[in-house]
Image (cartoon, rainbow, N blue to C red; front, side, top):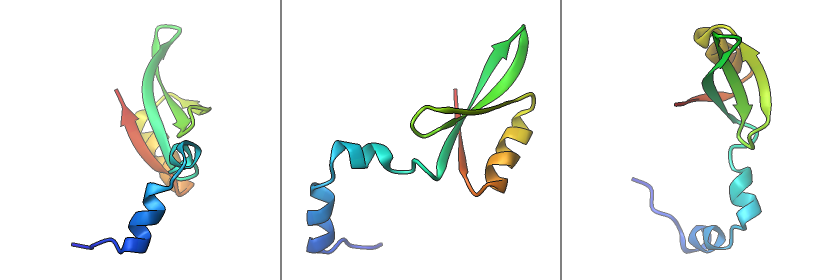
Length: 76
C-alpha cells in the first residue's frame, strides 16, 4: 500500500473542479448501448460526453477503443 506524502496530499486538496472534470479526459471512453432504427448500436463517448463513434457491435467498440490506447468503460 502506498502512502501519500504531505506535499502530494496538499496538491490534491487544491485541485479545481475543472481539473477534476478533465481527469481521464484523454484516456477514458464510455460505451453505451442504444437503439437506432429499432436496431441496437453501441455509442462511444469521450469522458466529457462528446460522442466519438457509433458501431453495430459491442466487441468492435471495445476493440477500437483499445486499439487507440483508450480505456473503455461500459455504461448501462
